[in-house]
Figure 1 (cartoon, one colour):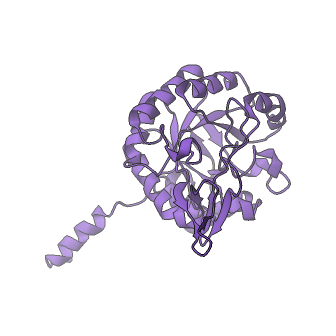
Figure 2 (cartoon, helix red, strand yellow):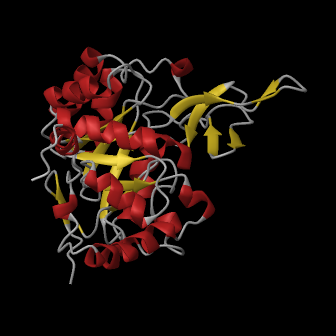
Length: 320
């Protein structure tokens, strides 16, 4: 039997498949489609201090290979989450990760403090990177100093494992990952959505009311793979992969480039049962490849230097 169990930042996951924040409700809304026990972890949609109505419509726009969104972190706030959502999540037979979002380091720290003593929450994912608030400025996801400050504040406020969710919309994601690690993060999530836009040239109308939004779906997978690979080489803490995942093969590719677990996001909108099926398909694929566990695949990708050395030898005429 192939072992799918993954240990990441002190958490024991049955398998490396997780939901992605903002795509699966708070988790148990989808239990009719996916048994929570069938996936490694459920990640909540972003929770903020105060309720947020979100951005104006239209705020979802389908594109050729995915879609754009500008939801704007709509949620009922931390009070409602504590009172109404977490008591229900106590029944989730899997790891529960709460994603938190703030507009200042103090807001992030306060959210972490209010969740610290809640046994229903196993870990926090710190949303440094939503492109649909604050005019898409991404103040915490593009500045190493700001990212480190936020994570340090969260670290001081909680004993729970912390994952910093990073943005691809920056000049050097590895630098931001190192800053999160310096601030006390137990892991990073790579990546959030890419900034994008759509337009109807006949009417001159943009696809989203906010004009730009977050682009996700199959087309972002190569970008996400590169970001996970860069982060895994830059930090000693685990990396959670996210972006364009829709098959078990995708999950295994993310593990190979260095992810310890992998989040399924946009594909779940069309098929809410997908995360459980992906998890069920991992074992046979690993077994067919001669792998004894999912864990041994992590970071197994070759960096090309071996092929380069062979090419040099061949060019020199030495084929021994």
